Amino acid sequence: MKKFRKVVVGGTFDRLHLGHKALLRKAFEVGKCVYVGLTSDEMIRDKPYAEKILPYELRLRDLLKFFDVNNYKNYRVIKIHNAIGFACCLKSLEAIVVSEETYKGALIVNKAREERGLKPLKIIVIPIIRSAIGPKISSSLIRAGLIDPFGRPLKRKTFKEKRLNTNGDTNG
Image (cartoon, rainbow, N blue to C red; front, side, top):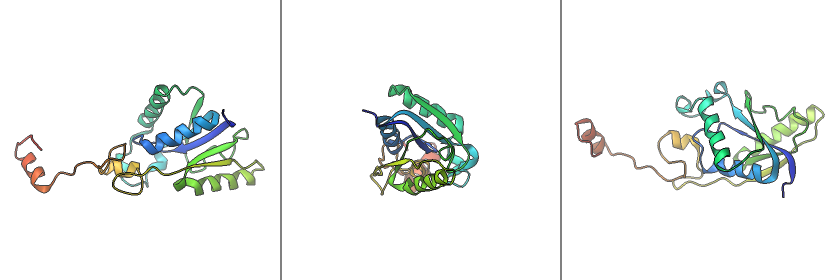
């Protein structure tokens, strides 16, 4: 049974990976309607490997495809231009879903809500999804070519393999 009428979740959602999917699944599990804050292209300029982050329209497309595949119907995606987004202003929101890593952001949202005379959101925290090579699956590691969206390490070509490839050998 859904606990909340309206919940919010937010992020860049670049290279939709297991961590993102766990976050989104939890939001749909606890909320009847999920408001998704999707960061604008302007907001991502200072992220690691920012030049490799997919444009807003492609990240939106991937989110919508994920919702469709999972038969999620009751949602609204809203472009956000700052870390707090619309969560500080929408009176009808009841909960926010975050990862252990983004918990502090939920506290900032609640402080902004309280300053506007709104009730703080119930904070629902999911654990970080670990990768095979480090503490977590992250879009930064995917953009760097170190892991795939499932957290599995990608085979790095050795210098010799790269050299063979540039000499016309297509086995690398």
